[in-house]
Image (cartoon, protein in one colour):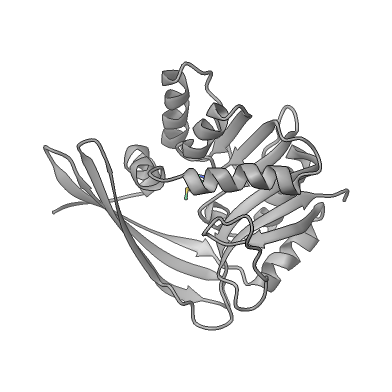
Length: 261
Ligand SMILES: C[S@@+](CC[C@H](N)C(=O)[O-])C[C@H]1O[C@@H](n2cnc3c(N)ncnc32)[C@H](O)[C@@H]1O
């Protein structure tokens, strides 16, 4: 099979087929989290690292005023095109989630699928939470989904799934190649096998994620200031199931609440 080596995020069409296939549980969870955990009414929602806008478009269709930011110009274009095609104004801008400001604070924010772990250094991670503390109004919430590194060997180091949209099929394989707890780096390989009626090819990407134990994540929030942990859930997106945050926690969907610094 023809193999292309490059960033998966430069192929938003295929990314969106895979990650945008089933967002129903995530959407229900987010809307219920807004109602349960925010201490203000949620009307405006911001998504740092919004990618293709798979969640922004759904949130917009549900009546929220949305905006997003992403470092990848192809993802931003894809997101804005999807809004234009739906007869809406573009909502995404090119930007870095560790250095930005919003023209007006939002009531809630969402950061999914380990996007935050792309931020490689501690200083930049602190800057992210400080920017977010400016971006989210007091009483508002920030929902962040990421894999934590437990203090035992991780249970899951490989994940494969298939998604289809029309005549397009994408098979994906995600593998954790190595874990350096001291350097706080996890090497990840992501492979998309793309099948169209005319062509099939493979895209292979490798990148590093910064690792967080529960304690390191708590420490980061403390250092940044302005946030409390309102609740932790997991990737099943069950709003009635709050999970403990400890050395064993792996899949975590944090609901952070904006408090005075
Ligand atoms: C796993 S994707 C998630 C996209 C989207 N949030 C979703 O749920 O589908 C990660 C995204 O993070 C973006 N990204 C990585 N580092 C970033 C940074 N420093 N600032 C803004 N976006 C960033 C990538 O371009 C990519 O679109």
